[in-house]
Length: 125
Image (cartoon, one colour):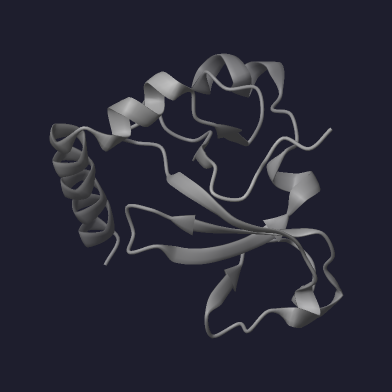
């Protein structure tokens, strides 16, 4: 059974809450690596892009919709019990609940999230 659908909003497991977690929109499923233009999409997998199969294209919605690609099997993989307890998720990239979708669409959350993203990336420069 497929977990993701195009257009679905998801969260990466790293971070203690939605302000810290990367929020993604699933753009396309079942993409072949050979069909990806590396100038437009960042491959975040461990292999060679041109040999990669069943990729998920996803956009970071609070980072100007920057596009990434990774194997479906990787982003849908289960976390260890330790990481699951630490981050409050079962899989690496987990669909948002309807309540979480409401939260991330709230203007006060959007403002706080954009500020947090800006601070995070300014620190790393």
